[in-house]
Length: 98
Image (cartoon, rainbow, N blue to C red; front, top):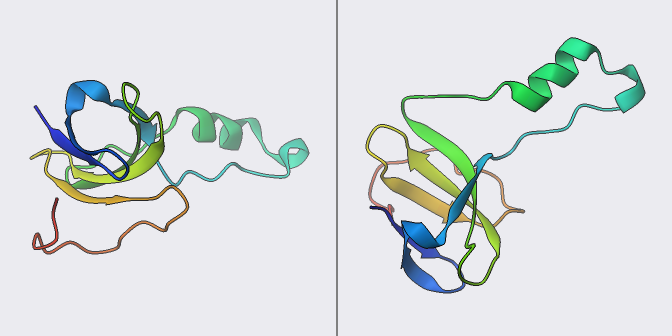
């Protein structure tokens, strides 16, 4: 089980959270000119890396606030937790992992 550090409530068990999918996805616009292929890719195509993946999480059974998590998909190690409005961290050396 993962121990996730909520930015507002502190460390909590994974059962209190829900993953909201991949973060940092930009909606194509203007919507009147977006092709069906581009719209379909926006709705359904997601990255599935073996490595660090950027995800949205909500503390569903706590403060109910959203935040971003950079998680390694093979080890489930959480590399960074950061606010929804912040840019994704670019590099990880393992020293700053939570």
